[in-house]
Length: 433
Ligand SMILES: Cc1cc2nc3c(=O)[nH]c(=O)nc-3n(C[C@H](O)[C@H](O)[C@H](O)COP(=O)(O)OP(=O)(O)OC[C@H]3O[C@@H](n4cnc5c(N)ncnc54)[C@H](O)[C@@H]3O)c2cc1C
Image 1 (tube, protein in one colour):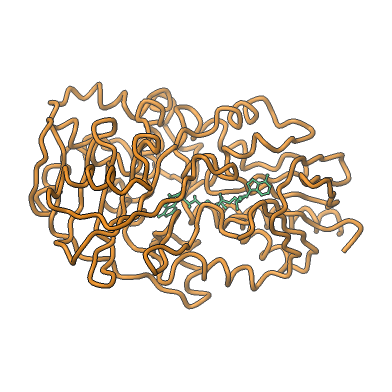
Image 2 (cartoon, helix red, strand yellow):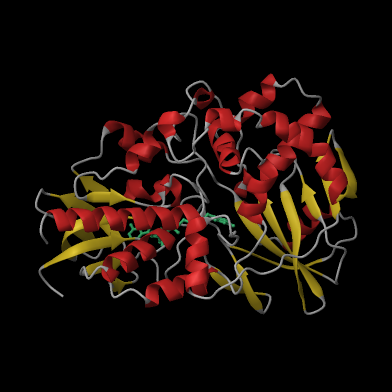
């Protein structure tokens, strides 16, 4: 289609795919541009060990309204996770083991104390005007640990718990941990169940495929965008290949850390520009590991900086073997493709474990992601990030990284994409288009 479109959506992760569907469902003409040769962005259902695995976002929950609505709409369920009753945790220089309940008993008082003021800080997480976050927004996640005067052992236990969502507690804001907890009634355990327990049945790709199939947008894959210019009456989007698309509005549904590679005219406000420049700090990795035999299901936890694998959990049985998902806080601390390095790291917990094969996607080196999920630096969650949720003229930012409730996840990405579509539909109606 030539001429001016109603909207151009840039990025085909969950945020962009939902925005494109919702806009086209309103009868708007939409061009949808995606840099990769696939949709899905930081979710990626791929092949490893002769089956599918999720290299990026995987888990969802019935308490997450936006992803849950999509799952119901397309008749997709959640897979039942493997029961795990054995836990290992590295603390005070030694590996401890016990039942999951014993690990839970060790961590529960520590995390309850760490997050005790979550609801007080964010009494209505949907309304930041009600938040009392100024003081905590000046603190990193590490600052509060420092101030807690914990024994080395307890400190390691607490950090081992936070580490599955950690990269560097010195760079991650305390506020986001409290905010997430507040959205789950002040209960960290409930938040963690929602965030990382229930895989989507069949993976994320069928969900995205169903959403995309309901969209009449003109989807153009392998089309990275170079520039977006809002000249008043409309926007012109220029691809790296030199093509242009003209539309009344643009949705920029890109990872925060990849936004800096797209030139925006006019430039965003200084606060937003600075946020885009510093990005979020999350340079973690998720490594899939096939180990020999149907081993005893376990979870393992290690503090950041003290072990290359910070969280591990048996996830599936597969052809007589077991698949383990590992989260490494520092992607550069271990090469997830190095079978022996991964085996050595896992043997710290389970001495006789035998790694058959591994699989990983390098989200940090991936130019269209430049990191994993967003965890904002001190000040950003309630500072510059909410500013990105406002339209910038005809440019509308969207994505899990800047979502309100559900920040950093698939649910937030969907909510944010749907918000952008609604805002544009309203503007188009107001313009009489
Ligand atoms: C390892 C890992 C594990 C995770 N686990 C979970 C989980 O279990 N549950 C959960 O809820 N969330 C999880 N997340 C987070 C979740 O995957 C993301 O928050 C969510 O997928 C973000 O969606 P999005 O649409 O905002 O961004 P993205 O999915 O990143 O989509 C952005 C799109 O923009 C494209 N793009 C980038 N630059 C350009 C350009 N210049 N031009 C055109 N297109 C461009 C990208 O290719 C991409 O397709 C995880 C993320 C990772 C990486």
